[in-house]
Image (cartoon, rainbow, N blue to C red; front, side):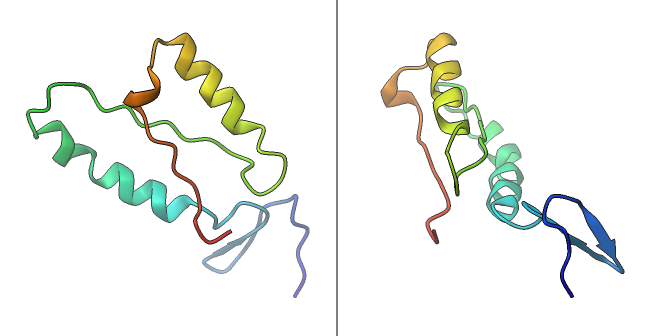
Length: 86
């Protein structure tokens, strides 16, 4: 079957459409560890930021970097992580 990639289509217990899979597993795992990090007695906060459009124009990454700079994040204080299977 072929579905319009720009329209979410639900068939049974599955969702079809652009972005319906992608990095959601990584994001879910990252957020699942948030309670563990919060109990770690770290000397600084941990902030999670997520972006979009990594497969095409990558317009999300520059927007995120700009936002991080505006909020005062220094280069040594964050890690950029993407889909390593691309």
